[in-house]
Length: 328
Image 1 (cartoon, rainbow, N blue to C red):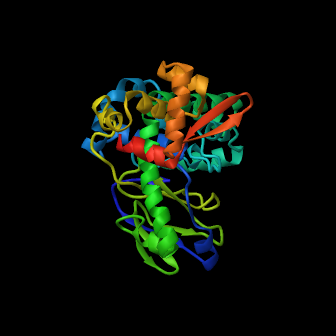
Image 2: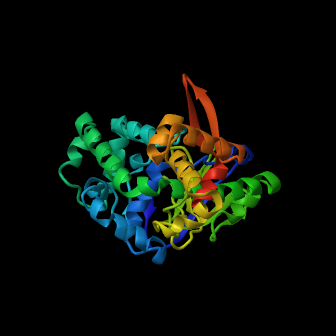
Image 3: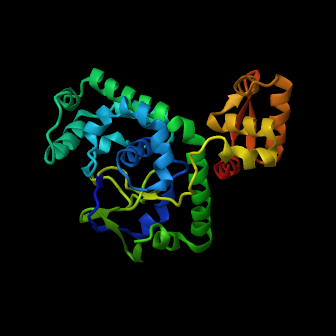
């Protein structure tokens, strides 16, 4: 993938089979959001949209981003293996895929990166596929996520889900081509080619594989994709934002007014990660009967789902619940 202020054209070539196989990512992809958020953290793009978030995570980010920064300069190429292709959109799977990156992929991407900058000595072990170096990198990525994204992940997911729901509606009611024509402000669709402004001239031929459309919270300005054509075709593009999305306290008052303080806390706790009634009670510092009753009310409203998991009941948030949290 490449990042730059200069613009050229990305041309994505479709066949009829590609249109039929084009899909929208089911949720934000953590590995992409990690990489793209680093650019928002280190640059000034997005202005007031990301400024409060930058301030809140600056200290923690300073000690967690060195290895990532070595592999992704502020403009130009960022190694493709930092954003492995995933079907199960979880951080755990992304980190495991990073740890298992094939040596050939490591060497190919690092060779491209070395063409534009001098690489630090630790990347020698990475190019050789040393497990300890890959583990060190994956641990650094996980620390960055925990410090800089995890506290905001529910809001990130909720906002992306709002955009995704609208785009799914467009695709369902008007067809894939209608969505492609409006996927980005620079999109120009004339079958069989989708053109978008891009940092460099780049051709992506889908060859029947379809395209994974990935709306991204931390993408800003131009869309991005893999440099390596053999990887799963993916187009990552920015969504619209609301000023104040990262604010604490005041951002949650409307949700509290709508649901009540306890029920809002229960919804947030389930939104952070699925949990049993006991876990939800512990996170929200409420009793088991209260947690169970509030979860049942949220379930009746379509904001959470519940299923039996052994002797416990596991609660998960729904897309509607995420969207409500994003409105916060």
